Length: 112
Image (cartoon, rainbow, N blue to C red; front, side, top):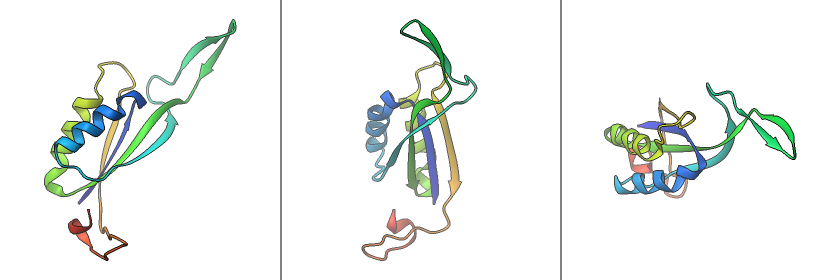
């Protein structure tokens, strides 16, 4: 089992969700976060004053998937979240040692 964590632009959330639903991913946790990568934010003009926006709004998705679904999940997120512009986001994949469904007590991939 793997935990796929993706940080994407907020306006791409619906596209990513639809792409994941098409491949059969059933559970997603989404969190509104702020951060920056290589672009290190940007400057904006507000009422004639320039100011720096260090942290940009992003959406962090956490998706627990079976090992067989990892490549399809990554491909779905990558294609749906891609705008071709800087700041499209990142995808991280890490191992899940154990998953337990609280309601039923199911464990492992059955709990996903």
